[in-house]
Amino acid sequence: MTCIAAIVEQDTVWMGCDTIMTSGGYARGVDTKIIQRDGIMMGFAGRVRDINLLKFGFEIPPQDKNLDDYEYMATVFSSAVRERLKEFGAAKIDNSEETGRAYAIVAHNKRLYDLSYDFSVSRVEGFNFDALGSGRGEALGSLYTTRYSGLTPEERIRQALSAAEEFTTSVRGPFVIESIKQ
Image (cartoon, rainbow, N blue to C red):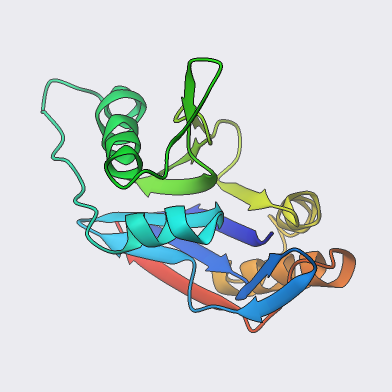
């Protein structure tokens, strides 16, 4: 599994990830699980094949000016992800339900969204941070307790990933932390 942690602060989104991939009891390093393209930042957990298909060759669809950001993410963006995975046979159909095998935190226009394996999208509400993956609980706890600490977003994300690494066997550094102005 993995851990992705993200913070929105003013006009910048910070996102960090671990760099381990685990499968069948084996662990190996990977490069970053974070993708930046066309003003959108995505951090992925899940099957490497799905992540690769979105990392290489996936084109972010344009947003129609008549759609608000949440509607765009929940319809146009999530449908483009679904179509990309379907195009390469990575979408799975079980009991007439089509699913992928990757989850993502997506940052768009200074907001965080959770993209689930079933291509549903939820908007993060109430906080300016989010986390996902097997280290999610530890990372969210750290982000919550450091929100008034005076630490920079990068320092907070590093602490969150470190907490996840300490208490989750499938989260390992080195960590990658990136930012994007939105």
